[in-house]
Amino acid sequence: MNIGKILIEADEIDAKLAEMGKAITEDYDDKDLLMVGILKGAFVVMADLSRHIDLPLEFDFMAVSSYGASTKTSGVVRILKDLDEEIEGRDVLIVEDIIDSGLTLHYLMKNLEVRKPGSLEIAALLIKDGIERAPLDVKYEGFHIPPEFVIGYGLDYDGKYRNLPYVAVMGDEE
Image (cartoon, rainbow, N blue to C red; front, side):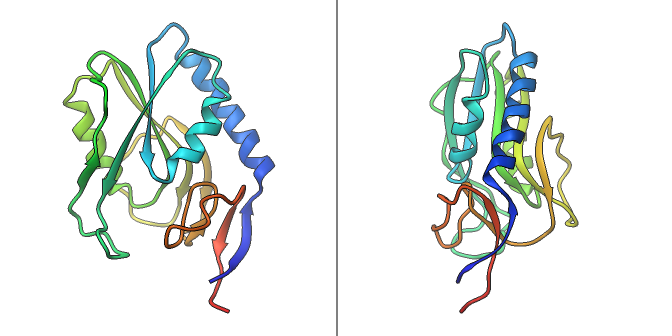
């Protein structure tokens, strides 16, 4: 496989994360912010986004799977790594690299809501348009992209390409 057309350049991503970080800083002033990254893809987004947030904050991570060894969702969501901290009364911001069908994130939001956080919001760098999606309220949105398979900036193909500083469409086999 090779890298296809670049959809979003590194400087565009940084500018959008700065904009999102400014809004988060204003919204969470004087609050106890816990950023929760959904592994593995969100770690790049979360690291760079957090540097644009001018507040003391904490990090935690979750790993979930709805695919198993398949490329299509099984419809069954498994929590592979849960939060290390209790979130009752905390202001929780879920950070995602991309929202596709939203089924896994919808399940995760329901799971976290029963833990009684003070607030629970979503920040996502990418949202795929043109596909059927579970109902989600994304408070901090980055870019809307076409329904193509993308790599880079935390997004992978077979575990690779997460380190690209931009988002690109996956190319064809050579």
